Length: 344
Image: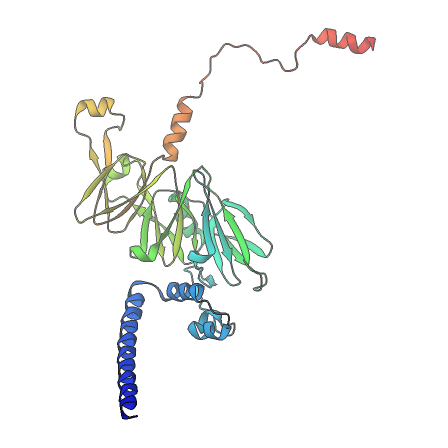
């Protein structure tokens, strides 16, 4: 009996020691996840992976997300629009290949701000409101940066019991790819080419970004004014052809063809540089200057700029002349036709 008691006590001590080590490792693992990933992603992943049917377990895991009585967090835009933030990880998807559209699901209290004229459809319960986004000066600022004077706010006013809530689909004015970026990850500001903005959270502001040098404005292919997207949240921008993302180190320089720039982070320096060599200038097809981007920072490029495609199409359109032969529709002799009708 004494041997059995000692064996049980020893096994109990071993079990307690293993449990203590396991708890310590789980705490370190939780701290590691918390430091590298947002809390909502961790909770959402655990909810989908847990094979539990008892809803009380899940409510204890994340009561704020699942409790209907918990107050919703709202944010205010610079022009006074108060709404709940949209979780684009769950509520948005980009469809298509060469010509893409973005579809966003809205819940009650959420607002999606988009470029006017970009809507494909909106489902029942979604209302749209046209706004200048802050007055006349804000509208003119956006107009000079390549956008429209007005913006469109989409808000869902339907029931919260529906599975997908309200749905809005947006397209581009030219066959383009759609790129989603988080402004928060790049210091609260991303500079884009003129007219690149498609839609975003209601907390995103569209401002003008001026080229720092005269040469960059004249010969950089993007003009003196770029689009500066600032604030908190995600943005969707449009680009033509294949999208390339480049991360530049400190003082690393990337030379690109004029017009291929989509966006770059706030730490990247934008300038132009003259192409060396008379033959390169005359017969290289890239013109006299190339755009230079100096790091550190992130750059996004497009393989088929819309301006370049439009220029190639326009170059192949006949400019008058021709054979001068009129096109006759519905052949046959007019007189014979009249006679036939009369005889009938």
